[in-house]
Image 1 (cartoon, helix red, strand yellow):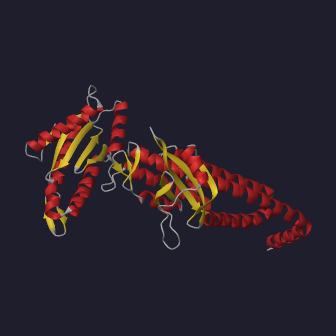
Image 2: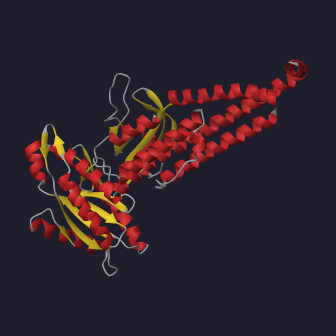
Image 3: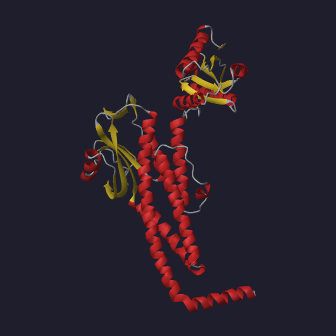
Length: 418
């Protein structure tokens, strides 16, 4: 009690003795802090939007080869139709960032809608944007972009083909009202915190400001790494555990990286590695001169499953088979969906140790009780097995395993050919 009474007494004395200096210092601290916070947050928004446009372009360039084309209201990259807004809406869901893809100055894919639900597809960019991005091939950032009567803070990046130059634009933006709301929340929090810090002293205020700026700089560096294509970048867990908007930004950035990595590296139906990721992992093994065994395998009579029970039943079989394959290679390799009902397994083992696992896998698939909508049926697989030989190039190694698979197919299926 005496300590508490004393504390109150000291507090009262300090307030009476230094109220004016504290208020003055506190006001200056809050003004400077708010200005710094606004600048840092604005820069963070700029970098976040820039990183988003670059990540979208990088994800398209990493997954699909070829030049961009816009034919019959379809956006093509090479021979692949990429007119799909799924990734754009996923980004909006995770980070409240609206994105658009332009062909020329015309918006052809977007998540932007008016309050009445009218899509911004078909709207065009302002003259300043066209000159900077389409004519000069430069990035363009503005804090006052009008779209369907709404003000946005936005960033434009040119989309270029190897021969034609700039053919379109990638846009990422946030509503100014949302940005200002987030900034206002940070400012209110900062003002309240500063009021407490004024009583504890300038030292704690300075220390916290440094921590906050450091965390924002860390997030900024993290986003820049991702924008440069480093999807293996990690963010300090301490930042994600922060109970404020900075922690939320860190969480959203991590989720966005994970979603992009999942989109680029994994097959969406089976959750196995896709063909591109598998190629990279095999090349990595070859560069390290590791011993491994390639197993090309295929579901027998898969078309009959689709014809007899429907394509949903086929998807069910692919998922169940994929789980069995993943369990088989767990701890000694990896599995990928090579295409359709064909899979590629890599055992980081020599042939004599990998072969028993393949035999066990064949038996497990053969005996698995597949059941879909009251239909019970059996499934078998055929396997082509090839051990890595130093004299074989990557493509030859895959081809040898594939040839053995087809020997097994032509020889009656449900076989292992090594």
